[in-house]
Image (tube, helix red, strand yellow):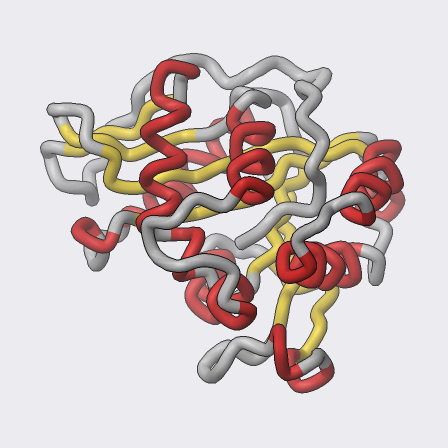
Length: 237
């Protein structure tokens, strides 16, 4: 998954509360909690070891190696964390098993975000986000759903040592509840690979726009089984 906005400003809606949410289908030593500022650096370390190198588009362009920092991605991640809607699954001892970096985007922020992207020196990062903005330009979600602000899951990442335990689904369930509690009606995700797309489909997300990877430059094209970048939406009841 990936974002459609790089704006660090906070949403006009209420931030997520600091509640912890245990799930019956998750190991008893894990719980989902909001990500507080004192854990931001730990989340960045988690992303360096997992998402930064594993995400399909990142991997396709060879954005960075596992464990390496990436300045632009880390700025983006921190901006999302500062919005106050992100969640993490942790063990009783505080080890991060997985994270959902959630944020909000307003219609008025799109052009500013694209302008900031033009100023980015990292061409690989710019290529990824140009593609992401492209799929979002295919449909005006704000007009379609008559809303001024959207909730989005920008990054969904599970530590390789905790995979196969349903944590991605648990984090998605928790993120939807977080969005509902904050008063959002529309939840979106830019799903870049078949695995995140399957998770979204399982929760009733619908594809409203897509870009087949067969139509993009080979230098940014993820290999099979990934077939397309999909803009996916769920209306929260």
